[in-house]
Length: 296
Image 1 (cartoon, one colour):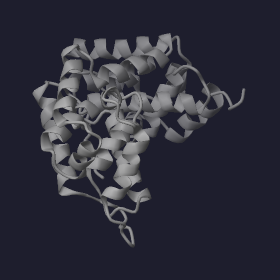
Image 2: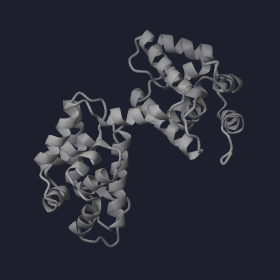
Image 3: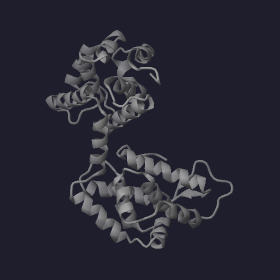
């Protein structure tokens, strides 16, 4: 399933949940009802909040989806998306643009499901006695109050960042504003990390060969090859840093986790190598000098 780079993390996980559900239930394709329940299962998302507020029971919804489709034997791998679901994804992007949002969240997917009324989601909603108009009204009410999925995700992410990590991200945004280059990207982030003397990351980058002057000059002259959707890429990388911190058992996300996430991202790794960083040496330094062993 090719994912639009503008999808929020919750939207990505809802789509992944939809595919897993279709596979587990031995259905022959991923349909709109799978996506509806995938959104419901994605706790913490705006879409799940809307569906829960409408008193949709997750267990009952899952049972209804199971019997909406015939069993496939054998199950295709990977599962295709139905035409109805592809249309809903197209409409989700349209709904996002209509609100002037730069991301596609589960709230936009719900509006698209309510608008399309195609595929298994329409049958599922009828069975659950929930109308598309109810969904539409509830989503629009939240959006009119300024609640968006991205604001929820950002608040959660920022709450996990160390004070120094927050300062680094703010400095990257300020650097981008000074250069009049639009939103901050991973190139701005790398330069700020290199200059942040309060963090060990700065020393590690120098020891691993980063040519800070070349990076700074390229930013000023905008000679760095562009990467797709740099703002979305930066947000995705910060999400990965938060996940890595969780995996390592730390209660905060530090600049070391941010550097690790940057190095593990293909675009980030290419950027680091372009300006002289030895990735093997960098990973070794992060592992031994920055990140504590698990359980300590």
